[in-house]
Length: 318
Image 1 (cartoon, helix red, strand yellow):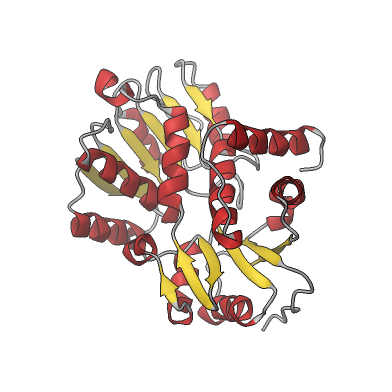
Image 2 (cartoon, helix red, strand yellow; image 1 turned 30 degrees about the horizontal axis):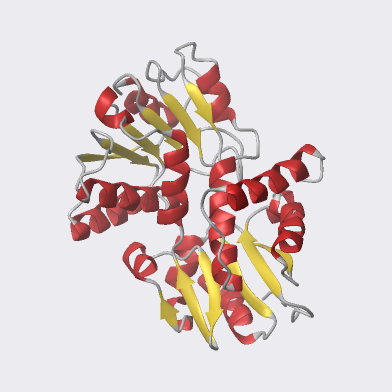
């Protein structure tokens, strides 16, 4: 079992796979200074599909250590919550619905688990796809991967549809393993998912190619697999056909980003978007929860924090 050292000053953790490669390790200190936070960040790297005992050990450490204030969870958000749900004193409504946790925070001595991705993924999508786009184009959404971030994005879209707002004409989801699709379908059935949806087991990239090639013009293709960041590669082959005048969005902002290279090389007028905006929204939402501060999701203050992050990356410190 890993031995986690007690924090010596207020600390927020990043629970991931290759945390030291993340820009947040340099961006967080700059953000902390800008926000007036006396705190540091520390990465906890865990193998993909870590053991339940390993996940429980991490959560128990944060819960019991006085100066460990919370964490952002990426790749492990589903498995960590399944393994350690009983260790959380309180669980947010979205965490309970999605059966995942992406933000861990303490409130009045209680450990909270929250799912922040429905907010952060939705804000990121709004920055990529203007309001009215779906109705104007009739475009569809293809989610390559059925993990926590993909599920959260579908919840955001469901809520938009329930409010009568602009959404894709259809959502298509693929995943290598059927159980993730089954879990997503179960959530969708529970909430009465308000958008037509198809679910496809895709054990090989060629299966994903087939789904991408059948999309309507203007459709959005999302890499929600982690391939290209935690592991090299892409969920598609180099022979994949992207939708004409479509959009390719990779939830990743670092790594080899082969998926986006494939989209650029497709010669179909595809607009490419990496995960940088998602990174900003994801981190600022969890930081606001952990430190109990208000961070706006748009406007001058949000733009200032975004520029601080960009400057760190441009300076080669990320």
